[in-house]
Picture (cartoon, helix red, strand yellow):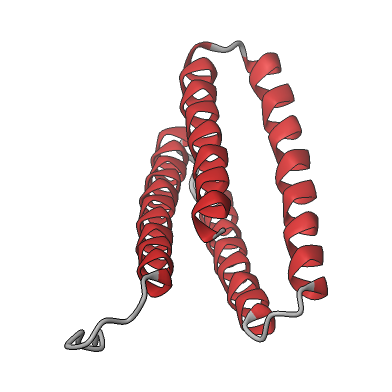
Amino acid sequence: MAHEILSVKLCELEDQLTRLSSRIHLSESAARPQLRREIQALRRECAETELTLQARLRHSRAELAPILARSYGEVEQSLQTAQAALRTQTARHSSSEAVAEEKILLAEYGLDFALQAANRALLLAMEAIEAQYPKRKGDKTPT
């Protein structure tokens, strides 16, 4: 059963990463009004997804759900802190070039963090699959 759930989640992730890549490429060539509309649409999507995730965690009966919810909240808070710092820097800098560089840096690290999160999720998935294998005599407990 875990294999099917993980396969579905993997397909969802793959679809989202493909969409993310397409959106980045389209954004690079979009006119400013179109880009602003896309930004607003993505903000709405992010807010809806966040509410859905929070609701699922809140209604989950899993013992880890409150810990996961707290961790997610901490990550979101860290991102908001970084964005607030960026807004402060933007207000101080008169150079639009410097502001753009800071935003690109924030986006670059955001993508790096997303990749790291995906790799961590892959590790968790592989460990979950391994946990379903029957324990054999002589197997050592992973460290």
